[in-house]
Length: 425
Image (cartoon, rainbow, N blue to C red):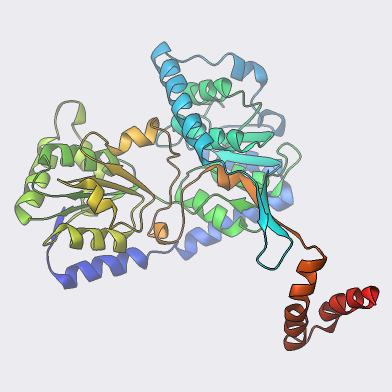
């Protein structure tokens, strides 16, 4: 745990953050997997599953059977949680849908936009260090709301080839008909490239490991991707009105993710020290060992003079999750420009959004929130612009069109105007 007060230390922290890139070794490993899947198809996925997950699968077993999904068994408590979360997530994403529109152009005619879902979407659900049951809901439901007809899910399995029962139950509830198991990164490659067992998708979505993220980066263009997301990260802006124990609990909730980075931006050193003292005190009972697991070298507190400076620091970091616990949360929000998702007030810890509140938890990391948004219904929709000129609109724009054609040395472009004028004579 580090407390940062000087401008120099803060600038160094920001340089390290924005300079982070995938290693050349990781790039090579992912490139090798892509080449293998392109060449060997399903056999490559099975080989990687045997090598990394110690599970022997044949190509015919990559797809989870309907019987396995239908027989999904989890606790009644988890089943109810899945159902409750699904209602909230669906309600939020239905609000995101945009309607097609048409309007008159300023020079005549009409212009507008229509929206069409992609034909097929693939969702990856991690299940290695933690089975992310909620990720099924957070990725599949936005695709369903967008109107995607064909949705497949892929997830790792255990050494016996079994899929996590919670993930099976979520797929059953959402009526997912295609579920594939195996080695995560190679499954993503298979969905993006297409194999005999796994038909190619148009969009790949969902969180994942560094290898899965790099796979999406390298295959962008073969398919569309939701976003480039790495290890979890969270930032809390807190002033003296915040309860240090609540801030400590909330920052620990994200620090326990493998490889995560967490930040507390505090308006005094006293508050920062109080939060870190509470973090140390949490290392008991059901949280015993949590402090060590969190890797506290990745936990920083930045001390600022006021909330305006706190917002500036947060914008520079551009966190995946931003929590605001101050006397005037809405005022601080008005200063925020860069964040994957924002959680306002002491009653809104990040896990409420991770699991159930409504918005998808698939969010940009690594400062990408400065230019990228989280997964939404738009991830699975194509926007098409529509134009319809009438004779008056054409006449009003023809000279402009001809001028650009001459400037850009594209005579055939200009001739489309000439030929129509000839018809009028």
